[in-house]
Amino acid sequence: MFNATCEIPQDNPPSEEIRAILESCRTIAVVGLSPKPQRDSHQVAKYMQDHGYTIVPVNPGQKEILGQTCYRGLKAIPFPVDVVNIFRRPDAVPPIVDDAIAIGAKVVWMQLGIANNSAAQKARTAGLKVVQSKCIKIEHMKGAHHAHCGPR
Image 1: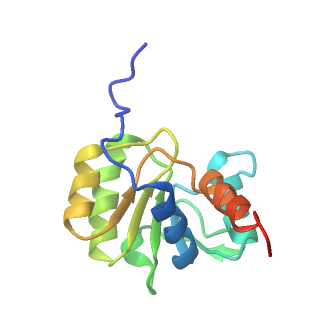
Image 2: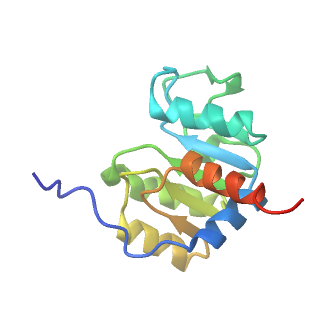
């Protein structure tokens, strides 16, 4: 059955731009990061952390995840973040995007299966790059593969 809350992304950056985002943006606030190792959000964040990214957990119910201080919301983070990686339902995205704009994030990244076109447009209008319904881990793995192809 069709799920009306999950939209099809109207626009996503080309793969070269996604690769550039992953090369230049090193601090990722993960909104909805679960402390449970079996959850996708935890596995994705751990993978990114293992590959040299600074992970900033955002989950109001936790004190620490993956050895990092956990924040109640984006506005509580006392330092700049590059990417706001969202693991929340599409209807929870608009206020997260508002906060991402308010804190000066460079990118809003909605995980696989998450898209909110009106929130995405608002972020783009504010000057942020937006990726919707793509897994940051999968995209990183694609880029890592490309980086090692060809002559050295």
